[in-house]
Length: 197
Image (cartoon, rainbow, N blue to C red; front, side, top):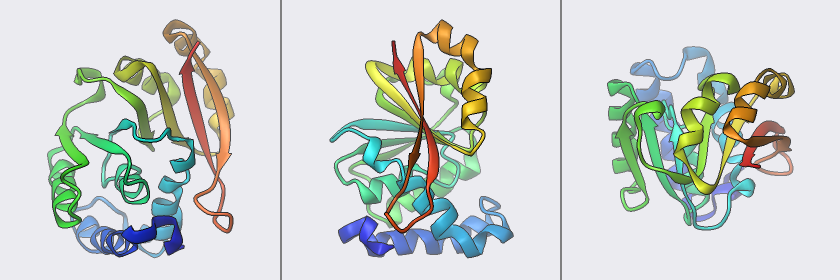
């Protein structure tokens, strides 16, 4: 579904090639994931693009191989993105991706943990980082006063929201579970959007 990326389709293809080759060699992508990089990882990441306000700066917490931050940067050139990643090898891979795709003006890599990061953002996002019970205490301090969290989750998202009722209450956040797609013909994915009450 190259149309999702518009003029950045070649960059998206190069990114998938990097995930397939160096991402696998560096242990960031498992060998079983290679055949479904587009559908399961890249398009899944872009599914939340329609939920993000125009022109915001967001932080991708625990960015790993750059998911969802890099696909979002390619699909939404209006966004400023910080890729926050604590592990050195992953941070080095992210630096390489940002450099090779020419994204330095809009995307920065910061090596560090969410709970120690001091900047705030209009949007906090993450994918496959941890349960809401863990993520809310880590990530709520990263939200601007009017900011929100938009987290990619699986089918168990409603259960996670119920299990995190204490954390939601103490951070004064409300949660909506949403079904989103990168494209009408792509598979739906689940996102949780958290906003201040």
